[in-house]
Every structure is written in structure tokens, then in C-alpha cells.
Amino acid sequence: SAVISQKPSRDICQRGTSLTIQCQVDSQVTMMFWYRQQPGQSLTLIATANQGSEATYESGFVIDKFPISRPNLTFSTLTVSNMSPEDSSIYLCSVEVGREGEKLFFGSGTQLSVL
Amino acid sequence: SQQGEEDPQALSIQEGENATMNCSYKTSINNLQWYRQNSGRGLVHLILIRSNEREKHSGRLRVTLDTSKKSSSLLITASRAADTASYFCATASDRDDKIIFGKGTRLHILP
Image (cartoon, one colour):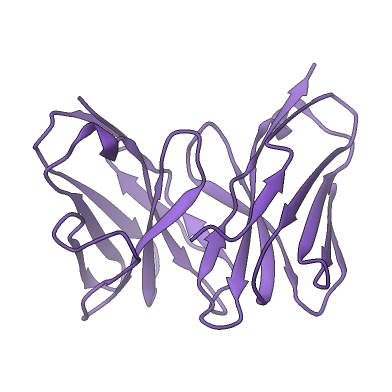
């Protein structure tokens, strides 16, 4: 299993500013995943973060808008840049433990509201 | 892209009754998983069923998988108030193991 500490848990931000979300895992993991969940919707994968390499972004998400850092095997950050009200969502980090594609553990999420 | 489609979108039942949620998907998979989310927070993994399995049990949960119909169901027996949550199916593609989530079912257990 894995315990993930994600912060902040919520924030209210002004349009045009940036917010960095931190994700700390209690064990070393190869891949960390960042998801977005818009209000009342399902989870959409933003990017996969591997330690020591550039993150891999899904269609519709770009590095300039969502820069990701992965300095070591237990930590990652996601920045939501130049925010607009459309960025209001829950952002979740997650990790896989065990076989690839089998089980995700999630942080408690960051609820972001952009005014 | 969205893979799973759950139905119903929302379900309200009396405490003690059984709740059934369904999930359909589009592509070939290695496995299908069900997750629970309370109040828009982090998801919790409930159960995984592999593509070569047809049924799996875990406590009050029963999951079925029909790969010919590309569908799965999650049954929660003897529901409790604490089961009130959103439930998501998620599939791991047999091409890249990427886990893709469905739209979810909001389950509300009435006292």
C-alpha cells in the first residue's frame, strides 16, 4: 500500500495566478499520476511523472499550463499556471503499487476554486 | 479519453437493500477496477477483476465481468449509510496499462 499526503487540500485563487500542489508518498514509486476532476465529472489523466525525466502529458494538457516536477521517487508537484475559472476542479495525485495498471492509491485531493 | 460508462448516473436505495451499478467500456482490457470516492476527495480502490475472470467477491462486494459484452457490474449487498459515495469503474488497457476512469455512479443510501 501507499500513503499519500497532498497539499493544499483546498485553495481559492485569483484569475491569472498560479498554484503549486505538492504530493508526498511514504514509499519510493516509479510513476506518479496527476488527475483532474471537474465538478460532477470523472477523473481525467493530466500527465504521468517519472523521476529523472520529463512528464508525459495526455492529449489536451501541455507543460506550459501544467508544469510538473519529480525531483525524487517520493515527491512530485503540479503547478496550475495562469489560472482561469475553467481550472476550478479537484486535482488528485496517485501512485501505482504492485503490478503496472492494477491499483492506484490516491491523495486526498486539492479542491481549487478560481475567481 | 473516457473509457467506462456507468449506469445509473445516480441511485438512491433504502439501507439494507442491495445496490447494483453497471459499467461498459470500449476497448480490450487487462483488468477492470472499481473505486469509491467520498465527498469529492481521494478515491479508494475497492476491487480488481482480471480479463480472464468472470466474478469476484470481497466482503459485501460482488463484481462480474463480461468481456464479450465489454461490461461489468458492481453489487453491494446489505447497503449501509456509510456506503453513500460515488463509485467509478476504471479499466487498464491491454495496450499500455493506462488506467482510465468512467463517469461514475452517485449512490445514496437512505436511512
